[in-house]
Image (tube, rainbow, N blue to C red; front, side, top):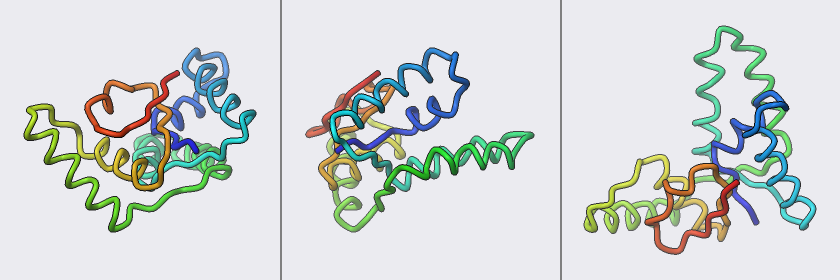
Amino acid sequence: MALLDTTVLIDLGRRSQIPTHQRARAAVQRLLAGGEMLFTSRINEAEFRIGPEMSVERQKELERVERILAGIVILEFNAEAAQRYAVIKAALFKRGRPVGDCDALIASVALTYGQMLLTRNPQHFRDIAGMIVQSY
């Protein structure tokens, strides 16, 4: 099971000749060929929806976002994920290795649902115990 980070969603929406699009698409195709289902979190969805809100072509960008999200199961941030979030933030704070709130929220959902995280930014998650991260 693979949870797609926001970077994957953004890169999938880029023009096909852009290298990050090509790498994200290849990584997703490998997952699908291996029988994996695609997931993302509600937090990733929220981050992904920022782009259209900042675009002068808002409607076109919203349609692109909806097309990309259509084939992906969105996992909710639940009570178990909330507890994991607190543990992640506290542990990293105590070690002097703080992580961004959204990254900790995404990690808590991935861990709660037993998901590997596919991302272009593995360094954002390297200090989070138990995370399985794959980069492209």
